[in-house]
Length: 553
View 1 (cartoon, rainbow, N blue to C red):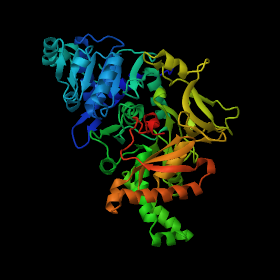
View 2 (cartoon, helix red, strand yellow):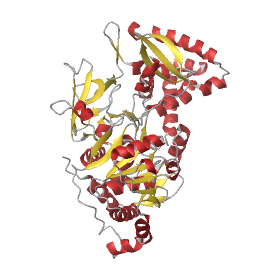
View 3 (spheres, one colour):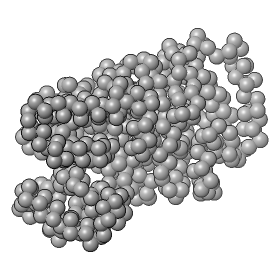
View 4 (cartoon, rainbow, N blue to C red):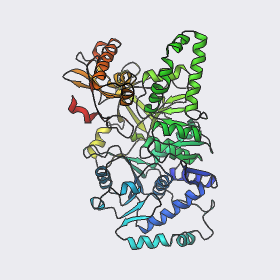
């Protein structure tokens, strides 16, 4: 068990940074750490009125915002269990998760609430607006409205001298308690509520405090979905406990909006998913590098260094120009992009984790990491693989230690399958290790394809190459009758700009397939490319939900 209790870390940060700005809604309101403490105290009074007990579930649905963060903090400091739900989920999925989690309270953005049917979540007895914490619906509305109307009086009774740094005190909540139910899918049959403890979150926070480059008073932008553990841990929970000023994007994070926010906020640490890095590389860097004049200049060593320096500075400026490093995680980064960023000495690091670890498994600072790795295993975990020789052979990665989930909520079979008899958690990821504890990911266990002669084929490796080709927005490699087929979602924006028809795209993809096959081992060769007219459905980590596309095989 981690000696630092999560609730103590939260309380201590509020007390130490009382008058400092804690959070800002992008181009909107701000709130100090002290006011966050007051809002938490108000919600605790509300929870008492709603008869919420230790371990009761509180569902939370909405985009990143100050009120989202306050609701999260208020629940875990009350000894309730927060159930964050992605705002992108359809109403049926939200109904399903709320019911599966047995949530008693629901905090929800008004625009999402409008499409819900509360008759389908009968165990929820009170629903509150994330816009202003007002009551939207309740089985005992009169009682709750009375509490809300008298909240100032009740707060004054609890804190006669006013709430201040000397009298703020949360419950003593030990780290073994359940803190979060994190759902990686809303679809019935695929639902897994990952049970994350206070200890799991504390392990991530303590590790980040010791190893990641942020200081009290620094700025950070929160744009990754807070309902997912990656964004929640490293763009919100850890920075908050450190005394960092967090700016929540509060809107759908397109690359243009994200980069504009970086320019304005100038964050000291940037978290990103590969999709953003790959789009910047493909849309902004490659067109410049592929100009005939630049290609010619790149052949001269001295000019090559000069051009690479200017490209690096352009990338640095894109992320606000004030950061220590960019940490990339959530999905595999294209090898081509990684090698380019390394060549131009861009300060980036690739981390590895999963929801079940809350999320971190491995990380290393940008100047200490190794090319092709996902960092070094964190000090709160042990790691091994199923291979006889993990340094030379690919095997399934397994971990055990402080930041491991309790299991899957109400799913004993899935929990049992996730662990070995001696307590190692199976990640489902394939990779190698080295003697220094660095992790090298080779692919997902479930996505691996066995070649006709017994070769292991990792479709992610082929997809990474495809995704960097012109007119390809994203791709998925599947198996059909023993042959590999690429489903390609076209870059329609570029195709339209160039006046391309579907027939033209098919010809381009066929030529690309032949060229690609020439650069890969024969057993990885694509037999066919097909146009897939819609963007592939993603998980919260922006990985393609492969199981949905088996029907195309």
